[in-house]
Image (cartoon, rainbow, N blue to C red; front, side, top):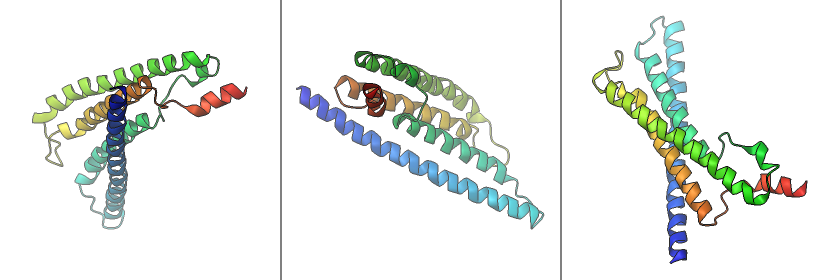
Length: 179
């Protein structure tokens, strides 16, 4: 029974890894698209003397998508802020507790993104971005999607930690044990 749960968690972790990879690719494509749009805007403004009105709004919207998707992937890959300084002085038994506290704080932040970003997205449904003609919801939706991914990635890490899988930073543990 216990191995079935662990196998299920590992399978879910592979799925979340795929989701993170898709989010990272979308963020990368968004960065490329935004760069192309801004280059087009610069060319049109300074060479053709006729800047298209949609370029700035669309590049900002794309930028919010790739920033928030990248932030969610950063949480899964543990590129976020943590209590690393305290990990150097804690005994090995206290490190998982501190990492879980950090994960709970990150989860709360992600949940706040979903909750309050969702409120903004719902309020913006009837408002249109003037030059694009799309609902303003699309400018707030990255907050919701990123918050949801952050929550899922943190829950994944905490579940794997509870199952005894090595999800914590072994480099920090090795540095402390060598000191």
